[in-house]
Structures are given as structure tokens and as C-alpha cells.
Length: 480
Image (cartoon, rainbow, N blue to C red; front, side, top):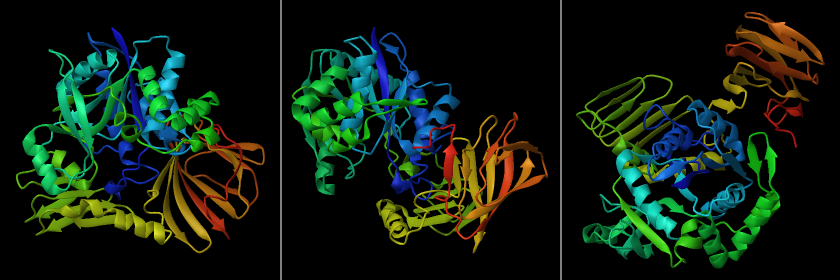
């Protein structure tokens, strides 16, 4: 029985699902298709692959540094302890990221027949049985030395995906086929021909192969990527529950996808056609397509009222939203941004994001509620020389020991008990009590209790930016 290691890539930002998905809290960390986030659903999907074909192993997660605590927390929340979490020093696309996982598996597991199943963290699959069957078929081909991709049977003439043209079967009883060619995103007429021919599948971005086979092909096709990532991996360092590859070496690696770097160059590519209820959840229109609808074709989430509205996606995150007399629209409300657009303009969301970036706004980067490894904070009010935040600290967690050069702070406990350290002096602050931290004083906030600590922070001073935090000591390793 072959050992199967899920390798879950979680480096994307899902910008086309703005304003819900943002750089600091991207779509894979959101519960868009059910109670689990897309990342959690992907992990659960791999757990169900255990059976007579594979000895399922703990997943390897590849992500960027900004999301590391959220990804660890979401994994542990469903009882999944990752085999490793690698932090990319910089996004260099999928070929280098997968190489990190392959190098890890070869070094950690002395098993020449081990397989790695590469999955994006932000896809949706609603037919687990068909997915399991496709993985089983791909595994048999991978054990023979093939680099297998999963081709999704197309249902529409989609112009937003790359396509794969299949060749002959690998064997008499094999469900895996040779890859005749990879095809770039087509125009509408060409996509229609692909659909009608039955010879093409969508390129899903999911793969299965032996780690050493992938590295051999990568070294042959892109020795520059292989050399840079190998050096970076050799320079790796352990940081809490995470592994940090060498930064400078990794940044020297060219940025390239596995498709361009390996799959389109190797002579050992194979494809397993799969009808698994797949979606890349790449836009609001795509999310509407895969979500259960009412009799009028509407998807509604949150505190919503609609009338004389059809085939629309309406989502309210923080307040009452009413939509009247509109068809084929997307309306998404968050506490600090609202998107209203025709469903056909799903690919145009980037214009709003570009506007935010060009005008130096933050709505494309963070939500009002900003998550931290110790809990979260959210802005309540802000004006000249003052700012008010609501803060939640999880039981047993604590903020860094820090000071500010430009602001003083007042803390008022709403619920729970706070342990406050100011210039080395500890005190306990209970509900309805408060304390004051003068400008320049070292201080730390901790929750020593067993329930979440909620408090209100009032900042006052000449500058209130988050970069006026000098961390002197930190439980989470956020000090250079």
C-alpha cells in the first residue's frame, strides 16, 4: 500500500472574491461553500481518501508568512495536525512551492514509492466518491513513474481555463490517458469546439506523482529553479511550528507554474479525466453556480430581503441588505465595503482593487476585524489624534511585550480578566476596570483565564499607525 501525502498549496489571495476575500484573509480561509473554510474542506477531502489503495499521511501545507497562524489554527480546529507547514519567503508560483514539498518528503521518508497529491487550498469538489476514484486511478499511473494531472470534464465552453487534450490510454484497464497537448485559454468559438469534441478537459491544477520523479523532471527542464529551491531548502530553519526555507536562495528562483516548468515539457505526463463536481471558486459568478439556489435562482446569505429578483447572489455580512427588482446581480456587503455588479462582470472586480491600491486605501488588504495569532482586533472609531478598537484575546494567549513612541493607550475590560504588565509591574484587571499605558512605557496584555478576554482600547497621540509598535519580546517569533 503506497503512502499518500497531500500537499496543499495555500498561497493565493482570491482577489476576484473581493470584498470578502482580501490579502490578509484570502478566500481559502473563508467558509464560502459550507460550514468549513475551503482550506478545511480540502483537508477533510484528503482524509476520506484513506482505504485499500493508500496509506494516508498528514498533509504538508505551503503558505506565505502572513497567513501562517490562521492556517495552523484552522487545521487544528478540525483535528488535523499538519506534517509540516512551509513558509514561502516570497511567492514564486507553484513549481518552486511543490519542489519544497518534494524535497521534504524525500528527506523525511525513506519510501521510494511514496506519492504526493498536490491540491490548491481554494477549490471546491462536491462528489467525494468520484474524487476518490480519480485519485485511485491517478495513483496507479504515478506508481509507474507518470506525472499525473486531473482533467475536469467540461460542462460549458469556458474561456477562463486552460485545456488538456487527451491521447490514448496508458494501458488496457487504465483510466489514465497520455497527454497529447496542453492548450492555453481559448476564445469562445474554440472553447465551444473543445466542448463538442469530447477530447478536451479543463486543467484543474491538481497533480499526483512520486516526489523524486517530479524533482528529476524539474531538474531536467528547469535546472535554475531546481538549484535555487534546493539551496533554499538546505538553508531551512524551524520557527515554532513552521519551516522557513532560506530567503535569498528562494528569491533567486524564477517564478513559474508547474504547468509551464514541468508538465508541458515532460514526456511522462498523464491525465485522469474526472467528473467530480469541481470548481476553482474563482469568482462570484462561479460561487453562485455551485451554491444551492431558491426557486428564482437566487443565493442569499445573511440578513437579506429580496423581491422581484432572479438569478442573483446576495450576501450580507454585518447589516440588513435589501435588493428589489434586479436580475443577474451580485451584491456583497461587508462592514467597510460593498460590491454591486452585474454577474457577467465577475472578472472586473480587479478594477475596484486597483482603485484601492492606487489611492492607498486598505479595503483590499484587510478587513475591519484583523486577525492575529493571539486573537483579533477591529476598529470602532477614528479621528484626529484618537482611535478606538475592540480587542479579543484567546484564553492563555498574550500580545508581545512592546512600546509605542507616539501614542498612549487606555484599556477597559468588557469581559474576562486581563493580566497587564506595565514597565515590569503585573496587575490583574477585571470586568469594568481599566488601566492607562503612558507613551513610551513597555507593556503587555495577557489572558490568564479560560474564556475569551474582550476589551476596548482607546489610543491617543500624534501618530496611531500599526507600525508604531516596537516589539521587545514575542511568543510568536515576530521579532527579527
